[in-house]
Amino acid sequence: MESAVRIYGQIDILVNNAAYAALGVMEGFSDTDIVTQYKTNVFGPLYVIQGVLPKSLSEETSEFGIKWLLPEFGAFRTNFLGKDAFASPTKGIPSGYEGSIGEKHFNNLSQWDRKQPGDPIKGIERLFEVITGAENAAEVKNKVLRVMIGGDAVDVVTKKIESLKHDLELSKKLEDAQSTVAE
Image 1 (tube, rainbow, N blue to C red):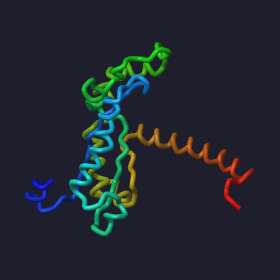
Image 2: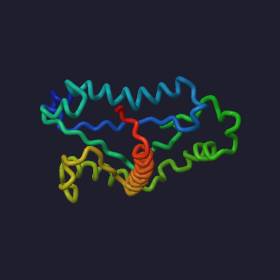
Image 3: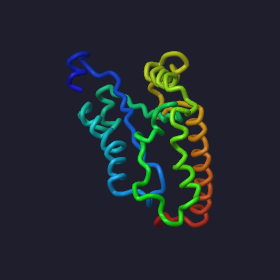
Image 4: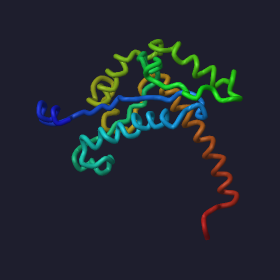
């Protein structure tokens, strides 16, 4: 970070695209597998933030003119599904999971390596457009915290919202029938 500031004078855009996945049934992973995932996906961004920012929350950084964007990428043709990019359960498939959808799904992930539908160049170009407000992204710049990049990402988030709306409606009926608010 210090080198970037020395060369460019400041950091205008910071992208942390490190990711790691432990993919499989939870019971099959060792503590080390899970710690590795946390080190990359939780502590990694924390260390990047601490290396760049005096404080780590968007409300705390707004006074410095720092804006946040959380891109939610779909499946892009990268090596993320390659054997070196994710961990399979080191303990193997637990008894009772043989032939399960979990075993079949996670054992076949590597066949999709570099065959994902999204073009990574177009995905990064879209991210750049959103950050800079170029092309069709001018109306999005600085107006969203999250942006879905890739049609499949839009579909996944749409389904999640529909599921949450369903759960919310049922929860609302339950709460309306008998409130849990203290009187």
